[in-house]
Image 1 (spheres, rainbow, N blue to C red):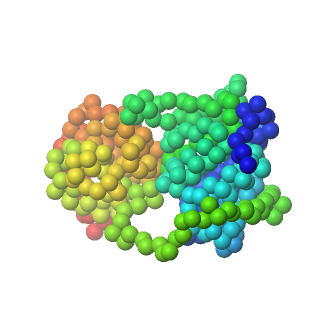
Image 2: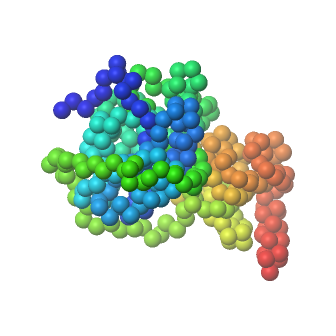
Image 3: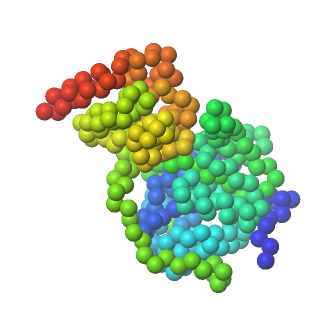
Length: 344
């Protein structure tokens, strides 16, 4: 069966869909973040925002949270083979769902899972895909999705349109938008659509034998409320100990610039920026980080930004809430001592 859509029938595609990614039965925060942003986009299009949740039968217990965060409708896709993410079964199930109900816009988190799934689906339905978006809006005249992402190594921001094919599909980085718990007053049961996909043998060639979690990865920057990041300005990899001590004093996680990761000073799990993690903590402390656009894209959504840098013209100060011009090798230890003193 040809699953590609006809570009001349774009008027048949209506509404905004959000992929509610789940792992181990838990919906990931990026799904809630995209529902909140989808509600804003829907105001310009006068349409519904629907969440798509896939898994086995046990996932049904997560439905309420999607309505609590503002979904107008939920498409529940259940099958035993969807309990854990695998490319082929998920692509089959969601492509069939998409072609049946025809959403105008489909937003997916730019996670490892989301990037894999979105690319496969875009090929199946013959539509465009904009990856790693950091901004979304609706063109006021054409009423189509404006998808903004960093380009040319993050040196410019490009806005991409998909005028001819549907759905307009984009992956969006986690933490770019903020989730908002807004109870939808509509009846959940009347706005729940159940869908049971039919799997084919070629979709089930890969089997999951067991799942082993890497316990050595203890940092989760995207969930941290406080992050202390170090850059080349700390001058030596051993000085990350100083960053760790400040992070411990304020109860935060340790982040890093790409330059320090590329130099082998710290593992890539700590990297913040365009090629690392996009974060939006309540407090972000940048120590010895100049603030190139690649880094700013990944952290400028933080509630409060404290920048410590001896260069008064460093770009990091353009986004900082508070700036300290000074040598971070002197300022950071002094700040750590003062925080410990205040906290007893």
